[in-house]
Image (cartoon, rainbow, N blue to C red; front, side, top):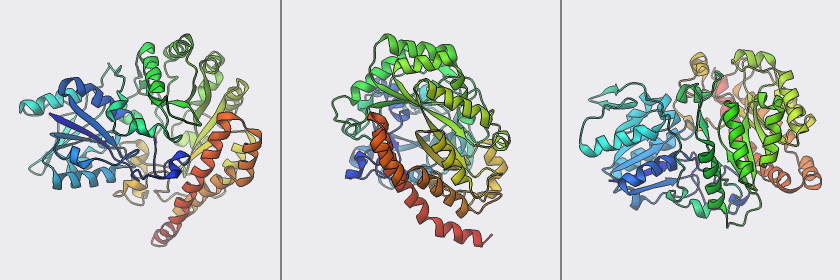
Amino acid sequence: MKIRFIEPANTPYKKSLKNHFVYDENIRTPSNGIITLATILKPIYGDVFCYSESISEIKWNDVFDADIIFISIFTFNANRGYKLARYIRRHSKALIVFGGLHATLNYKETAKYCDYVLRGEGDELIVEFTKTISSGKAVTSPGIAYIRNGKLISTGEPKIPEKIDTIPDRNLLYGFKKATKYNTVWPQVHASRGCPHNCDYCALVAAFGRKVRTRSPENVVDDIEQAIEFFSGSRRLANMLWITDDNFFADRKWAISVLNEIINRKIKYSFTIQARYEVGFDDEMLVLLKKAGFDELAMGIEFLEDESFKNYNKKSTYDDILRSVRNIQKHGLRTRGLFIFGADNHTTGIGDRLADFVIKNNISGVLIQAMYFIPGTPVYETHKNCLIDTSDWSRCTGKAVHYPVNMTPAQLQQEIITASAKIYSVKRLFGAIIRKRGLERILFIGEFFWQKGVRKKLRDELPYLEKINKKM
């Protein structure tokens, strides 16, 4: 069989000089998901290849004659994925199969646009599915949904794969090697899956479970070395690898083993990683992180109010966050903050409060998003009647998507703009150019222009948000 994978982009790739320093306007880092699944199928079927609209256009003359086309979607690019499926249907006889986080949690919707939906993690299921299709037998493996004669059929909950040691062959993604010349595209490795916590707004537990599953430390570091090698040879100002686990430190013993493996192999590279606040109290881990080459931790701080933490089942406090940040910085590591606006207790002024917190506590950079509501999460169930539009998922990119309790949607969006403008002001840009050095300076300059573009998109949508609020 000829098999092709597609990763849609909310805003498809466009060639531009901005791609060298502005992220997420015309270009972004592709995910490893489809590459991993393609790597699994490649030895079985041979003619397997991937396209990601994050870094290239799709070569349709190569796609249309495929036997199976897999499309992987998150919530933000789901509508684009559905549009591509309709386009493929008009030009191809290929079997169209959806997978990914949004398809897993919202399979009843997704099944309307394809022949099959593969739910959950596809490492094992995709092999069973393709073998069944090639043999002409009925599809019965758990984790599959489809529509027949107008009726939705589900084969049950997907099995959770335990063997996840596949190292993605990045050469299977069209245009990836060429894209490594851009500073906005980073090497990334995903080392573990699952999270033992249960924050109400997080879709990952709903999709992948609370049991943490890990790849072997040797396998993870093999992947790191291959990712670094894949990106070598390109003239880049910033060389940093992102370990994309949502909670790398959940299995402490394993995390220490991975860091020691990086150290033992004497890998000289810069790393960034996502973290919960608890790691800031683990001095042994912080020492190892610094020794292994980690420059910063992207901490899911989310809120600044204890009430918000409690309301959304986030087990932390403001004092915990503050003590953690200070101890991380004490070990010579930068802290990046990931924040959410639009909690039920948030009011106007949250933008200024957050900006003051970031500047006062020397948070190196931020990602600010409006509260999001992914189907299948607890917060979606409690707030689905407050959502602005449940048909256009393309707005789930940090924009206001609901009617908050104490603000209008337009006010919520304006608070994000206010915080971003204050944190990434021209005055702070000049300060970063003068006082920061090396990678830290490059990152702030890049984020300055990225945030400028983000604010423009948010501002452009304010008239729409003001208009819909008047109808309430």
